[in-house]
Image (tube, rainbow, N blue to C red; front, top):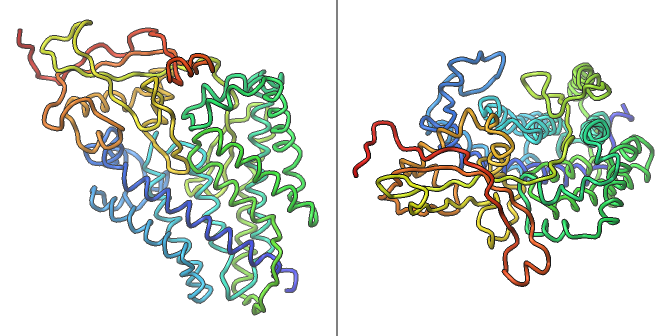
Length: 473
């Protein structure tokens, strides 16, 4: 079938696949380096406890069959290895069917992680990587031109990402309709980046222009993805520019990068296509069946998207094949941070020698300028932002975090920037206090060198020690 493939998009496919492999690599690397403290056998939310109460059909995962920390590490590092192979172009050396299978390996491995990742993996970019990764597996390799249907289904994902995010903003916080949300967002976002302070201090009229441009990009431009070229390419390019602007303004894991990957599916990059053989019949049948399945599964996400009770970032099937997305339906006006401290004093008093733990990404020390981590994702730091919004968000894991700090647990301390205690001298007590944080002004920055100012609000968790420990007066 002549209409089945689009040879002019062979370079777009190549760029998309290599970029997707890079995102996979980052995701698996984050899993390999962080899982022991978060999900391991002695983690804050242990996988063995979770799989014991959740059925396989509800959350398909290899870890229902077997779990040990060594096995998880092996799967995560295997995902890294396959991602590196795909990044290097190993799929191009294989027969078409084998290339598809190879691309499905990281998808299956990451699905296994996400489906047992619980709160640590409950974000839209996890499902977005899985949905994109599954569909991109059927883009083919150098043995065939890219299938038109797969390219359009990738644009369909991008449409739902952008349009869903635009709708949730219009239906959510009034500041999006008043064009004032960016008065607060750069200061109160979950994990600011090194340029976020400067973005916050841009003139307010420019902030209003930014919000208005965002509405156009998310509510109008997505429809242009399905128009003829070069309009579709121009729409995709505008989305890419918008996403790069977001990359500069904060740390949003790989959300922006996977969105850019999807936008490449609409770009017709200028390059002379090579001579590619016709698609085999079995491949055409598989792609047609895949398209029918994904369009069928799109029913619930579309109903949710057009509903007045739209919800963000929800999967409607356990394989995360078609999902609904959205971000920042509401924007906090004030930033709160949970500051965790410990002391070696035998009796915990207000005037004890309390020493602050420093996190890698979340605000803490006033002079510690935020760093760029995205697309790498600091899961504990991100959840600490939610903990500051309400203790209810941290009810499952915060107690476990404090317990492991009292033990000087090595895996947990590796998630932090710095512990104030030597490895062989754990604190006797830990506590948590809630502070209000705000960006300093230009004048305050010049005078103090601090990008943050903070004010004590209240006690978050009183001084706590390990069960069975005794005070010595």
